[in-house]
Amino acid sequence: MVMADRPEVETASAPVTALTVVGLAESMLNGLARVPFRRPWQGGNGLLGNLGQSVTRQAIRSFMGYSMGLPIEEFRSMEKILDDLCRVVMPPFVGFADGVEIKSDTINGVPGIWCRAKASSDAYVDDDEQRRAIGATVLYLHGGGYIGTSPSMYSAFASSLVRLTGCEVFIADYRMAPEFPFPAGVLDAADVYQGLLGRGVDAEHLIVAGDSGGGGLATSLIAYLHDRGIDEPAALALFSPEIDLDLNHPSVTENAAHDILPWSVPVTPYLHGVQPDDARVSAVYEEPDPSWHPPTFVCWGADEMFRDGIREYAERLEKAGVRVRAMEEPGMFHVFPILMPWAEASKRVFREIGDLARREVTPDPAAEQTH
Image (cartoon, rainbow, N blue to C red):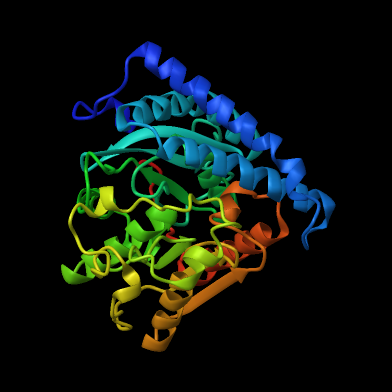
């Protein structure tokens, strides 16, 4: 269920939506036309790498800049069109590229999609001995600055996680701002987490992961679970997490010209009156409990606006005694492993994620395939 399909969410009329999509196309084309004038060949990643990074940066920046200027009903209508497109394109793509199947499900009242290896399904493998066991489960909270995107838009990245880790991945379709500000998304994530436990998934075989706003939501979920005495997951994996909504670090301005994020990052719709330095929404201010906090992997780009806040978060975890694997990749922008999976920096991240799953999560010999 994309946000536009929720009964509480308003959408634009068909003619206005059509004009919105046309405007998006024009904005993207205008942005890409600027690439040759920004010396896209410069950088430390080789000619093709530099060109790919420049084109990706400008395309995403144009998309986000245009989207952030839309009325919310037009934004939701455009988002639904993109989601519908991903629902058509992604299943055959990930089936061919990663050998992954996508299925819709609702866990504890929260919709979402499963990404599982076809080799683990009896629909594709008849012989029990040849069927691949699912060793662990990933609860993935998609990014989008707490306000946008959908599980279907993340199915390609989630399928890569399935292939790299041997896990199954559930991408939760949590409620987002401004229609549903904090703590709606956290409560949805907690409902899914407890729903998975209720279905027989052991916390020792469960990884919580997320990127950008979804990464921030993942840290809020960890704090929520800790406060309520719920078993911690086996590991936490974060990709450029948005975990400092105070936005008061030098990198916010220093890297504004290099990142894909808009120079004015919107956080007010999600906070809805909550102070940005509240540890429930900004994990950089949290005092982690090393006796409970799960081992954590976190990566980010040296050229992203959230860099300093994520650095501080990783240092805080390490000083508290939490096992942390932190990766800062030079020359990379926000959520680079998702936007540029072909880059060498992204490949290093993927190898680390595979190691995390093998190191921190004990395969469950009794894993069910009908969670």
